[in-house]
Image (tube, rainbow, N blue to C red):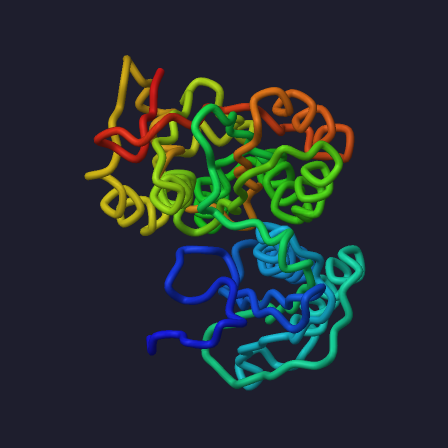
Amino acid sequence: MPKLTDARVLVGTETHDDAGVYQLTDELAIVQTVDFFPPVVDDPFVFGQIAAANALSDIYAMGAEPRTVLNLVAYPDDELGGFDWLARILQGGAERCQAAGAVILGGHSVRDREIKFGLSVTGVVHPKKVQTNAGAKPGDKLVLTKAIGTGFVTTSAKRGVCPPDTLKVACDSMVQLNAIGWQAAQVVGGVHSITDITGFGLCGHAYEMADGSKVTLVIDVNALPLLPGAELLTKYRTRASKTNREYVQSHVKLEGKIDPIREEFLWDAQTSGGLLISVEPSNAEALVEEARKRGASRATIIGEVRPRSDRSLIFRA
């Protein structure tokens, strides 16, 4: 990527943040992101909801509010015999955008052998209120707002072996907007850093927060909120589980006798996962309580921030 030289770029390609931020005025900056992927569930409406929630999540992770959306579609219309499936995907996406208070302005579609759907999203934020993944401070507590394990669940569902109740819980989690965590953070205050947990898994996104903040994150593996039933499905790994582990393995230290099943969740790639929030220790319990009150029932304190040591991440039992 070419080096960015515009002073109005507050967050750009040189960081590992979730979206770009461009300052328009002293009072207003826009936040931009884009994300799309193939179906992770069979229900087209639910897939549309999940893809939209996943794309909108990057805006919330930057402390911003989504305002406008463009649909991104790849669809093999000549193979599926019509557009009924596509209509349901778009309806699902529109439902989540409406819930987020964002307006769909249009979009772009191409013919492709594999269905793909997602959004390009523009949000707004005051330039001084931008949240990044580079602000965590030693002493902070780490709050995770959703349970993890969606990779195991969706992979097993594709193979037809996922219990319906487990899939339902995972879909409900993936559909939930991260507006909940963002709003709770605004109410409680004391938040220093935010990122959302998606394709790089907990390990990858936690590493990027630690690296950007020049600190060490210590995460209690036994405190991690897991999707009910997902512990029975950890053999159904996505391809990203291996690459996620390889991405961070030289920066990770494992302490104590960690349950090998729980360890698998560290590397599992998430779809529309929750927010990882670094918050002042005196505000952590209040943040969890506020997030749960708003619907993030699995919000949990999972660790703490320490001064930088020889490893960026410590996972302990």
